[in-house]
Length: 505
Image (cartoon, rainbow, N blue to C red):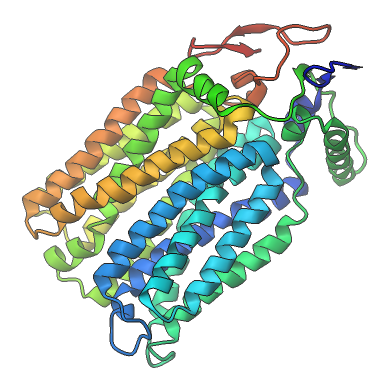
């Protein structure tokens, strides 16, 4: 039913969100996961490769007049700065222009910047395109998380989001192993191998870009921007494909309708007021989750190589093998625990993974301080910590994506991602690189304890503030700003589990 509203656009009542949420899992959903989720593999590949090739780039004959410190310091900081600024810049545009347009543009930016990094001929060129590579990746986080959560059915949203965010570590495994191969001068010349690693990233991005052409715009985004006819066509096509996969058996009837006032955009002031005033408890939750995971990861990863070489006499060339093992543990956490976020529930699983990883890191610090660990057992301890931490960190992205209204979703993801990335990429290195680089056991123990303490604190915040979002529609968790307060077919209203705002139930 459509009613003319010339002042603010049309008012429509729709069941499209409910129709998307009631869909059974299908091959179509796998195309979404593959088309959108694989970018995290590229991010993991990028970060790991650059860290591993730092030594080779600084050697004579690499083709670049650059030092190892410039690669791991200036270039890494520029990548982080690019990711933070890209997230904020593209995040706002994702809410205005749409999910599809932005996840195509940001991947194209990443592709071009990575390809141009491969042909770097001077230090300034390398720095510039490291920044632009991060600028593209930062935008991907906002556009992709928004699209995935708006296209995946409610009962699967948690596990899918965690699995996709956790796939970063598949890229890290690939980056570690690829670096070992590419840096072997008996296979590739010193000035060629490192270039090939970046070129491969660009090729993979091109393949993903081609796959993404078949991923539709989010029908939820289309609805609030006055393009409900297009949204109807997309959802109808999805339903027909799913029914064909079910041998023509009809889908169950969708329950629930939503009445919305369509409009082109929401002001930045309205977004800020919504996120930081109306949903302030959820903002505290998002802030805590991102800061906790950022510092825990930096407590381990920034001193990773130095700890193995300094305290356990592991040759520098062999640290990549240990990192690959840890990366596998990181991926297995979201993969194996993801379903529990949809069944046991968000609050228990988010707080539990944060607290467990923090406590396990405290235990690792105690064993390390006692001199009870070897390189192998230290790696095993890190694997146990990061198995839970990775699921928790991935749930931070899930949380800020689903607990804020539709119109603010991408910008909310971008803000908290930029906040966590800045903390991890700026404060983290300044603090942890100094502590783990002294060669003193006590300083490294302190680094572990800081990361563990902040992770536990975030877990306690989640125990009180996490929203029970499992198996609930996005519109039920956070009522869209464009939703009508009442109407002939509007759903009833009540209080969200956090008690901070009204929500459709």
